Length: 230
Image (tube, rainbow, N blue to C red; front, top):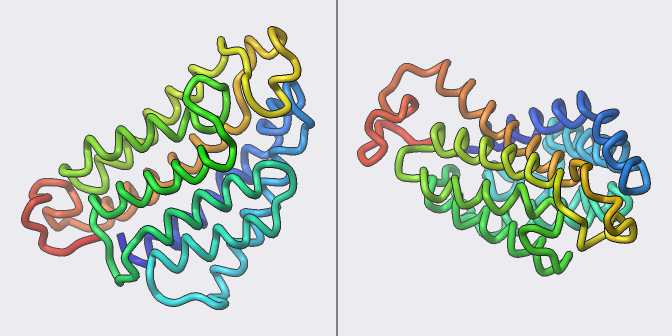
């Protein structure tokens, strides 16, 4: 993972969140306050603009992610800003400030992001929150990290989407949705849905990069002895 891929990840996340803004808002209208899609789209759009301009950034993945986290905390209202912002800030802060990071380093950084969410939101898997997508995604990435970034990110995205769907039969235990009690059952959690979109954006970024490169490393054929690292 290098700075170009980190930028592309945030750009692709912005595109997916923007495309799914109305859907996220509909999900939030059912069990929340109907602002998740609008707030998240605005925050990621602002982050995308700043990153594209290169303002206040150094050329490392750590800088891109931590700076995006700070922007989201300042730009997104409601609970999503602090949660997403702290997750990305913690992820970036946990990475070595190198030009490139390897899958093991990235797995540890994702874990730091998850832990920041859990501390801030006091949520655990099964509470019908973004943690229900984030937790299995991190676990899947860690299990597949030895196979390379491409397979690991695909595994993480699939696990996040499965976690997202698994929120439908749950009763919410945290956030505004918890006020609905049993009425929260049968609805997909908007935070888990947007989290799955962010992990899908990561997987799409790595897939596109691998398709444009024919070296064995990018195709995951020799992860232990790479020709170069992403």
